[in-house]
Image (cartoon, rainbow, N blue to C red; front, side, top):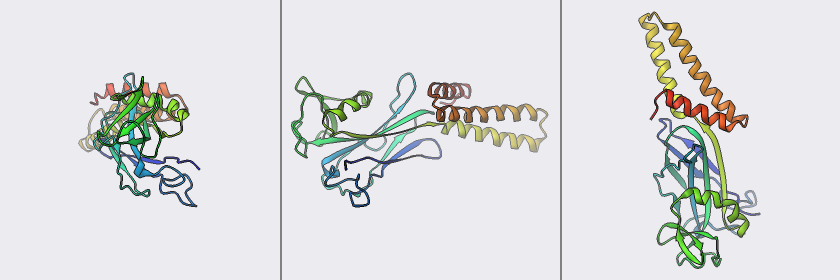
Length: 237
């Protein structure tokens, strides 16, 4: 069976970072879709993670660890971990992508001759190129690579990717926690307007839950709009 990437996506509790870990594992009788013969070898492949928000700008989150990882001595059981800066709450798409690796921009390490439309990772330059009009061209805009994935997979099957998507509301949840602590403090002080504080806090919580429910119901635009509106109202930077 062909390689099928599996990834574990986690968000650091302070809302500053996101991690994506390759959990594909090594090929075996119990893991037919893992790394290694007869599937792709990890030491001949480049693995990368692109994290993108579903906002108007299609914001690509900055990588803390290298966006692409390649090692000629990699073991197929290796779990590569990618750290990304958590930029803002949003519906977030996490793409884990396997690309062919090369040293010469002509032929991949596993013997594929590059033709028009191929995207690949140069292990010497540590960057991604594509063949355009017969010439290797540097790829700097990661949205371009994401958009090209369906074409690449149809081209020759050498590009493998997996998508993890969810509505992340980490910063909004942290802000709600702050408001709840403030409410508890006000109760000890015998504040006169406790009822207003309580219902403002309750409405905020229900709005956060509503965004998550919209996402799970397939109402992606509504979920994204709610997240952006709450972020603006709470002045979360």
